[in-house]
Image (cartoon, rainbow, N blue to C red; front, top):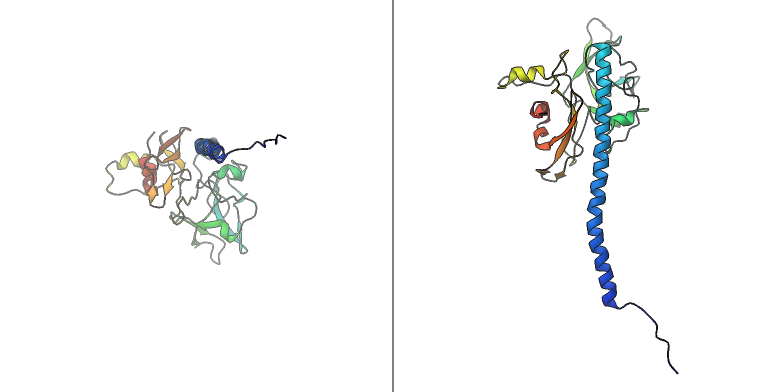
Length: 258
């Protein structure tokens, strides 16, 4: 009687198949990761374009640029609340912003690479952080309205363009939008840099509006040489420029060139 032979794979065949699958995975995973990164950059670029459109509309209405994108966080009755009036200086002399009048959705203020996903509705103390530029506003609700006391500005962490804390964790937070950046007295091109700030009525087209550092390619020791930041200029175009130009973030606005 002939015995029926059972089919099966040999150990060599199994190892061969596993090896092929490993090679394919090694080829596919970087492509998928690159596609995801490209999609996030595209979304961030769209956010920056939306910001530019809102900025131009604000400038046409107010003949100036806003102090912030999302606005500073104010404390009222112990709670963190958003600014409720953005077009022009309000009755308390507080700073003005684009959100929520000119930018309607808080998601447009949040880079897809950011781990902070606030929706801009209800705020807690942990949702805000001190302003890296150390800006203040004058609180008029005091016992002496004629002599208001300066109060520190706190920024919403979800606003990726007002406030960022780039990777790796532990880096100090950065401000990436300001109508007035600090100037060095010994600047060789002082006059050129003075005019490239949003505090003026008609700054030049190459003025830096804001940038995003969440796309940086970083390691534990620093930023890789090929790392790029997304930079929005006042003429409306977004450009990828070396992250090394923004490591000194308070001077990045003068290092970025069109």
